[in-house]
Length: 323
Image 1: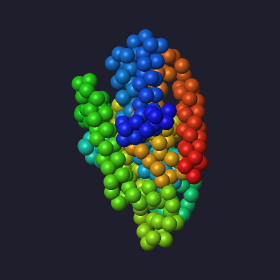
Image 2 (image 1 turned 180 degrees about the vertical axis):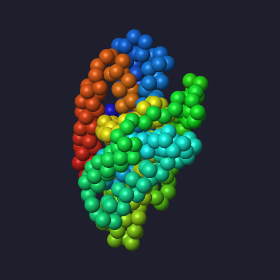
Image 3 (image 1 turned 120 degrees about the vertical axis):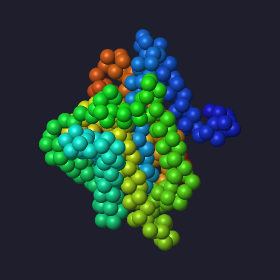
């Protein structure tokens, strides 16, 4: 094992990411062998459809967790963005481009709200995110009068936005997601913004004593999170047609699982965007595989919960060994 860890390629890519990639390949092979027809394009597209929006949610929460915080409102906020923007398109006849911008703006507002309460009012992130989750559900229900919202199909007026996910069978959404992931990786690893966000999770007090405005950078992490959640809403409605109020909670754990599985520490100070990408694909493949076997969604929720526990425990053990 030590020889494998010290391999030049493994050191350059990262041991955790190499293992994750191996797990992903092994899972796909097992599903292809165990499930007839799983290697076909239908199941591949089913996996990618889940990757599109869940990937952006995981990227979003990666920035928050890197500061040592948490956000359990990302799923409901995504639905709130989709419901408000879809209602504006269907009822007030705003152009589709404007509706998509509304998605991002609603996410941005929630990011600013969460960030301000956490950074400037010193409200614990857990409390803020739980409150924000309920606010998002309530706002969406009031705005849409508790009605579900349907977004246009590709052949209908305004349905062009669905080409952002898939155009003539080509996974455009995957290209966009990977491009945004590269931007997020550069932002987190090669800019002052990323350095301060990671330093907040490592040693907040030391950063504050060095004269850095920690509140500004902490709030910025939540603002970035909100923008990415708004983008996730766009890809959710580009993949699925109907959005219902009071939903979205189920995607919180899946997004966090993909993030933590990828190497982002729940204690903050350590984050991996590339690891998050691989973790999200694993979660999405697992979801598609479980559905293909005929098992219920409940089984997938149980497995996702177990993955979160195992990933967090592995992070705790790794930190103890390092210390």
